[in-house]
Length: 210
Image 1 (spheres, one colour):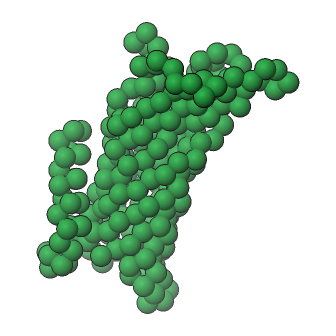
Image 2 (cartoon, rainbow, N blue to C red; image 1 turned 135 degrees about the vertical axis):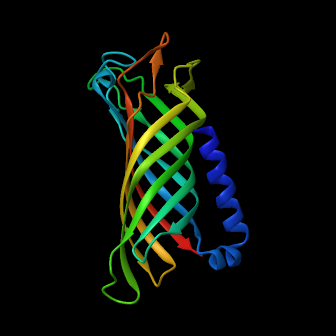
């Protein structure tokens, strides 16, 4: 997966630095920036790190670039390199003294997606659907209790997700996307034993195609 990430980042850099060349070869490129609504889920969420934890949503950012290789008028293979923030926050026990936990994980995420563009209803508006795996590599993590950073090394270094996305393109360049990335990997461990806790992220993204 590391080799795949390096290849995708290199392709993205080439396209973003020289969009006029990418157009000549049939490749497309672009930039995107969005907001994440992140959470963690799974059977072990109810007991980690203690029985009173109640995890809720965390807001964060995502952004990066992409390259796409059209294989027909409506289908393309799109590879992305994104910096994305995931995790969750904890609200504490109701009617008791609250010691809020906070989990933030920053990843380099490399989705490899099949992109389908529906036939346009008008010349300036296209519906776009995408799906595929997302390979994520941890860049930084922080686990806090009551505002203090804890010495916790149980955040695993890799994550695998499944991306499902729907969006629309305006005038062939600007676009908006609504994306769900379902975590498939266990992302937290204690004493070397993985807990059944996975990432989930809903993203609202805007971008620009070259």
